[in-house]
Image (tube, rainbow, N blue to C red; front, side, top):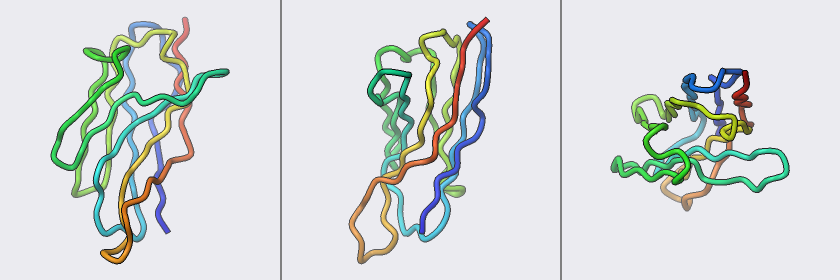
Length: 121
């Protein structure tokens, strides 16, 4: 089995900062891309940021310049540093990893359980 465990969510005032972490564990052979998605009430899940195993990143336009994604491959962990948070960033944030459990397997997507981020005064 593979588990993705997120941490770091919470309540923050507008303009504040939070850092999310997501650690992947279990039967992991290799990890390709890792990323963060979010889903606000009544809206579809959307990509926030993504990073490949080569370090190439891409961001949603709405978070460019405010959020930074990084990864520590030794720890199978991906981070999302969120600065200048806005009420519109309020959502459940989900970690995603595209990985394979063995050389016999193809790459598949795995998801964390989600962590709530609320930006409010």
